[in-house]
Image (cartoon, rainbow, N blue to C red; front, side):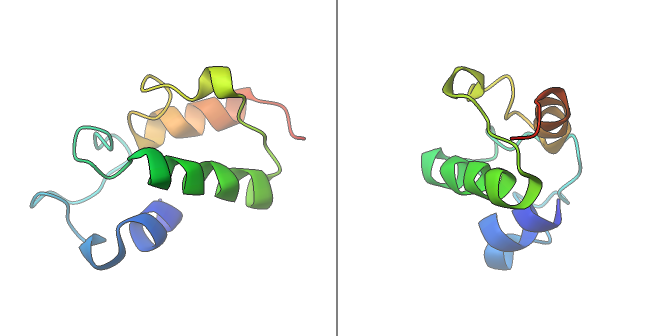
Length: 79
């Protein structure tokens, strides 16, 4: 959550649309994740967590919230 809050939200880190960011916050719905930010997040996951996210897994279902992103990362093998 720290990466999303600081790297993707910047000055908006404390609140998006007036609601605090939580693990179940709808990142796509709120516009936090767009194509560029998703690519940045995937690069972070690859570099920092040593997990490659296959293109077939880059879907709204997996990137809906921090909870779903966490579930995805935990389901994938380390590179």
